[in-house]
Length: 406
Image (cartoon, rainbow, N blue to C red; front, top):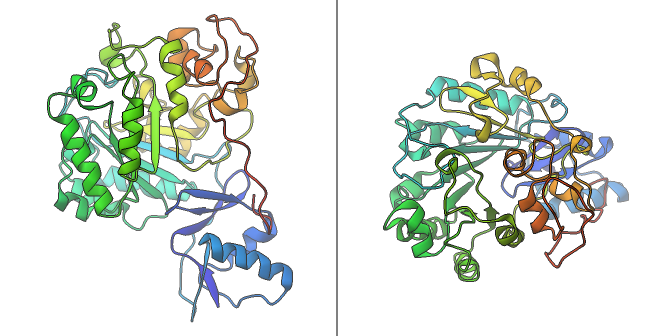
């Protein structure tokens, strides 16, 4: 017998898929392959046909299916996702924070937090909408007064769960109790550069947290903001993260919001910081809905229960948790690529970059110059010009796999 591994689930997104939440891999299937995988939920006899056997072998190698001695009852949440699909939900469970970071877009910390009942309801709704990745943030999420209960709520959900933290509260005991598939720690340069944003001692504690997570076998990712004090740190950072076994390094440029809204000497010109974005690595590639700009599959929930297209738009909510995630998702004003005044060969790759940041640098439908410089596109501001390819490691398209899996 064979059966679907516990980490994998059929997902009816724009196309039929199977999702491995342990590896964050999304496999696009044809309908015949999807029906076969769905039928393996509790277990089934292995098919004898040579064509089916090749597909089963592939799924066994990829960890989608596993050998089984007997059937095991498993409920699969059926249903079709909206179009475009809501794949990623960022939940700010609290706006309490233990740091006063100079670049924080959220501004001053507060005391608000989501109740357990509201949190559990939105998680169940997200599962029902065929969601993929649940990202828990703050403030500092570990400061939620009932974080231990939230940690248990996410355990075993049909989602990839990611805890996004500054690392200051990650002790060995806390790490041992975590039920998240991934923990992302913020690290904004080497010691001097990181501490100038977050306070003395923050770097050492964040690095210690990364070590504890690695020792515990937790999948670790790092988020870094480019700022004027860390521009020369990226080679050293890359070596350190490789030594710690960090699986994903997400690098971004700050937007003039929150504590940076009035401007700051920390902000870096896109020409100087944009190319550093190309040093990001890792992270599974989930093919987005064609024709949509950045944010096509993301929505954010704030600590007060408001729902917005992302955290930058918290002041412009489209509704609340009580309205339901599906209703809020329908109200999101999604931007299409054809609405942008961008015209270069990388548009399908960068999808116009960050729309909030673009509005600050150019205009609402203009290019995000940070991404323009990342991809080696010459930009003169709001205007548009075709760019040229630079040696920035642009990822090629994925190859086609057997058995109807792309």
